[in-house]
Picture 1 (cartoon, one colour):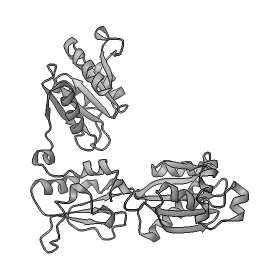
Picture 2 (cartoon, rainbow, N blue to C red; picture 1 turned 90 degrees about the vertical axis):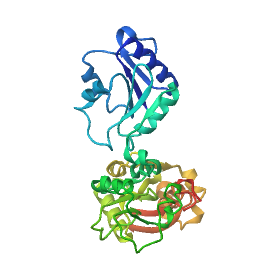
Picture 3 (cartoon, rainbow, N blue to C red; picture 1 turned 30 degrees about the horizontal axis):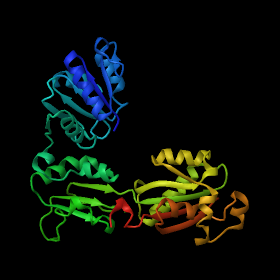
Length: 346
């Protein structure tokens, strides 16, 4: 986590430097209090904070909470995009998780700051206070995409209030340690809320509050003719995933050969899906191409007999193939991480 530590007074600047050294963060103080390692705060303080607000994953303010609240009020958006904000008093007695406690990581940052300077962490989120799980923390820790966030408050309230929350899971997620005390076999009890953990399409969502956690457990391998259009790639993938009853949000990465690094359609696809492109050299693909059918045309075109399948195979840690299709100059391989490799759990 990239963090900034911000202070306005002499004593606060000293504490900010201590936090910055221990947490390896950037320290911002008033110019007259700077050391060679510090950055100077110049101009209007509110404007300065607004300028750096989205440049860091975490902000630690060594000052009064009221100043911080008034300063960040005009730049906050939502809990899923705002950075973690922690406030520390000038004496270093308390480290308060103020904003984005779960999704942004402010609760954990407050604990780190408190540990670094011997302060008392102050965390007020209900799930932490009551000692129940937080779905946005699980999503953050496991790289899940959180869907239907409109109901997240209602589902979280059900946990806090001790109501019956039913988990509906794919097999791959049955062994997540945090969930073992919440998964109940009693299917006849009244259910107050639902949590789905699945890469499948939910055809008929319940009328009860629910959220869906989408695991990033699918890799797509791509081979294509030069100059392929982004729209053609996206349409083919959407059709394939619809037929497989999978969601695009479960795609972890796109894998292909490195000669496609400048292929605009692929670059646009990765940007649209907000996932990384993984490239493999001919030498890397040749090592495993004997596991797959070889195409003479592909070999004479790119120097290796297969692209989509071996790329997806490598990117998924020798995963399971669930689809292999060709259409209009596109070759698509869909692979799923094997259960033992997914998040390092057996």
